[in-house]
Structure formats: structure tokens, C-alpha cells
Length: 580
Image 1 (cartoon, helix red, strand yellow):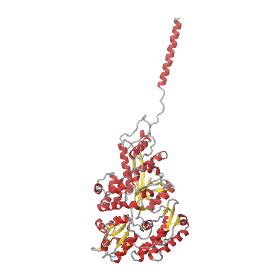
Image 2 (cartoon, helix red, strand yellow):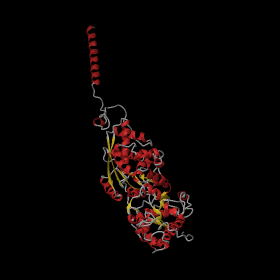
Image 3 (cartoon, rainbow, N blue to C red):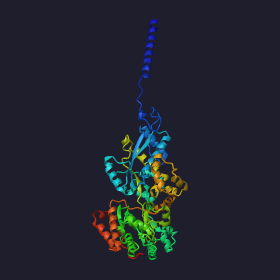
Image 4 (cartoon, rainbow, N blue to C red):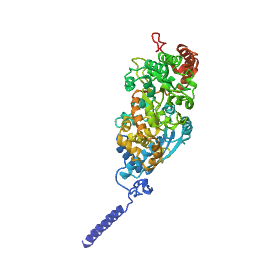
């Protein structure tokens, strides 16, 4: 019995040893592999915590834009950081005159402000910007076209709206329609509708308006005073359609007959586009049918345009050789010079642009009767000389108009391509690029660009700043909240351009965008516009009557293989209409 008990005890001991060994083995088994964020080995330039430790918290979900800017920026920043991305590189390609540098620096400022949001929220990501500037619109467009297939293009393309159709059709710029819809109520509802429409291709948004201009009629105050004409309420009469081109003719005739001006009307030379196309819109016509996608030759409106200019030229109120005048030697001097004692004489009306306001202050067009030399006008002299208003309605019952050629922010289809894991993170880079444009469209940034470049704001909130005395003084004194880099870049331009008179002018003309039209963004439009220029020159010179010029245009369109397919000829020459 004793031996049997020892055997049982020994068995129990053996079992205990086996169980203990098994337990020890289980506690020493390697744990499952844990995926550690690659940020663990990445050094950040924006945070003191240069490495990330393994964490049990869930990785951020892939961001989807909500329309809440700060929320979206934070979500994208956290997502990029979780993927090990600490630096995002973007390049902007832009064009324009030397004062339009905010087309580049607006995005620099946007990057700066987004970086500040990330820094404030402890997100270790930073946007780094680079730029490329080309003064020629067309040259930059051509360079972008050739660069995209090679993948050497900029991420942002800032240029005229006229290039949207071609770039979108070739798949070179990003369709941002869904993004715009998310930010419609918070941002884009404030933009002027005509400009937002210009950002579309086939009903989809491919761009965001960056700046624009209007084309007012300038009226010489001194000539009006000589005529005994009170023009203090003229702009309102034009807005209400109570002062039309028939009235323009009568006043021009009166100014010349009374010896108050040499000419009744002066306009651009060379091209009918874009200034003279306003006549078509003012007479209730159109140049494009969005339903068919075709250009339109609107016979009644074109005939009325030709007849209007024909009457002005035949009555010696408009130079017959207007289309061959020189801008610097004839057109601008005639517009700005004194009516008496100057080499050119003067005009009552000028079909001009908002940019001319600052051009006359920087170019030596004015003949000074005291020094007998040409010099720029001062802002104070301009205020004394010029009144401005919309392009009047053609006939009673028509509406006044202006015409704009907006510049656009565009995002390349391959935006973000120079960053890590592009194929996997492409959508996120695209969303971030869009948010940069949203921030670059802030009212203050847009208003600053407007002031220093002489362009008109694209949104109402920016236009309102131009009437805000506190904001104006802060800008003039450079007390505005901008990044050091942007402030340094624009300060010399602000000193040259930011006078209260010029800011007041821009504020006063901003309403004109409520009446604006745009020339078609159509591949065949330039050719059609060329035929218009040829025809109106013949009308002014008197070698063709308005009716003959219309028929001449129709023949040209039908004989051209491209235009015959692209242009729809509508309507007929009116029989019960006369001018003036």
C-alpha cells in the first residue's frame, strides 16, 4: 500500500511539472507583430516630438471634405501624419503684370495659414511652396500644355478662364465640382454668379475665380460741364436702362457741335474682342448657346452694333480709322488730355477698362500745358477728369452690361505628384490643394490683390473691405496680418498703389460685376472675333454699310470649314429699327 501511495504521489508531481512547463512556455511565446507608423523614424521641422511611439489608438480615417475648413484641414493633416508624411510640396505657375503677384503669393499665404492650424493642433505636417512666373498668358499656357504629359508641370495653374475648356477636355486640370458643392454655402455663394459660371466646363467646376475686371464707360467731367450737362445721376440712369446708346449718340453729337470735345467716342484699336463685343450683349444678343455648345452669330444684335458705330463714324463723332490708332500716341492721350491746347484734343466718352485707372497714373500719356511734356496723371487729377458708368443698354428695354475676363485658380490633374505615396494619397493631396484655394480666396487676400493690381474683387465680402476705412488704413500702413514672406513681397507694391482714391474707385466699380458678361471659352471664338474686327473696320471706314457687313460676316462663316460647323446663325436684320 505504501508503494502504491508513493506511485500516486510521483504521478501527481510529474503532472504538476508538465503543467508548469507548459505554462512557462506559453508565457515566453513571441507576441504578434504590430504595425508601427513610419513616422517613428521621421524628423519633423515643425514639432519638437520628432518620432512617434507605437500606439493602440485607431489610425485616422481617410478624410472627406465636409465644408468646415478648419475641421477638414485638421483631418487631412492627421491623416497625412499617420501615413508618415511630414512635408507636402506644391508649386504654383502664374502669369500677369508685375503688380499681380498675389496670384502666386495668395497660395503662399494659404499654405502659411494652414501650417499654423496644424501647428496649433500638434500636427507634424508642413506645406512647402515654390513658384514659377511667366508674364505672357499664352506662353505660360503653352508651357503648361507641354509639361503635363511629362509630369513637370506646376500643381496650381493661374491663368485666364479662356483656357479652361481646352485643359478640362484634355484631362489636364482637376474636376472640383464635388469640392465646390461642399463649400458653396460657406464660401462660393459669396462670389459673383457670372464669374462662377465662367469656372465651369460642361456644367462642372474646374476652377475658382481669382480676379477679374470690368469695362466701364468713362465720361469726361469737364466736357460735360462745358455742355451744361449734369451727370451726377447718370450712372443710376444707366443702371435703370433709362440712358441708352441712342442717348449716347445725342450727347456725343452735342459735345462736338458745341466745340466742347473733338470726338464724341473713342474705343480700342485692332481687335473687336473683348471691348466691342459688349454691343452684342447690350442689344440683347448672345455669342454662345450652352445647350448646343455652339457659337452664335446673332444677326439682329450684330446689325445694331454695326449700325451704331456706323452712325458715330459717319457723323465724325468717332474716328473712321479708329481700328488703326496707336494706344500710346493717340488713344490714351485723346482720352486724358485737356480739350484745349493739347496736340490731340479730347473725347466725351471712352470705352475703357478698370485697369486704365491706374495705367493713367503710371504711363506718361497726359500732355502738361505748363511744361509741354507728357507725364502721368495724379490720382487727384483723375478724379477731377473722369466719371464712370456701365456700358449702356442698346435700346430702351435692354439692359446695361459690362464684360469681364476673369483669371482662375486651377488645380492640375496630377497635383501633389512630387510627394510620397502619390498613387495611394492622390485624393488627399487634391483635397488639400483645393483647401489652399479656399484659403487663398479669403476676402482679405482677394481685396489686397484687388488694390495692388487694379483688378476688381471676385466676391462681395472682398468688395466690402474696399469700403472699410479701418481695413484701408491698415493696408496702407502695412498693419495687415500676413506671413513675413508675403508681406515683404508686396510691401513695395502697396506703397505705389494703395491710395485711398484708387481703393475708392475699385469699390465704386465692383457693382458692375452684377451686370457682367463673358466672351465664350470656345476653340473657334478667336477666329470669329477676327472676322468681327475685319467687318467693324470696314463699317467705320465706310467701305461697307451695316447690312453689307452682316452679310459679309455670314459669307465668311459659311465658307470657313471650322466656323460653319461651330457657329449657329440666328435671326434676321431688323426692318423697323433705326439709329439714332
